[in-house]
Image (cartoon, rainbow, N blue to C red; front, side, top):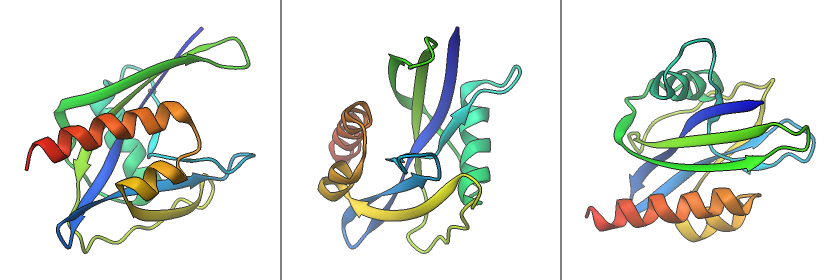
Length: 138
């Protein structure tokens, strides 16, 4: 069975550097990743990403649908998962209100520290792609 998830690499520019928002899951293992979740019903990927970011952080965002990164992998239950992450820039002064049921903690980190904090290699690879994309745009 195919599982589709969508979310975003949320970032802000602070003191001439990019900081990335990482969320720590309440799931066993408390992995660090990006705001994302499962596609519900006939949602498109942008709608899912917008909804999941709002649910997990209370942020109202405008997804940049012109750029996305993807990964796919097999789950222990035998399902195949595809994950699409867009990018979202938020104001440096934005405040986050975490969804306590799903999210244990959140942190803003510059690229190198964010990459180190991410739990899974596929997420590190996605961050690499996004960071390259954002730093080329300067």
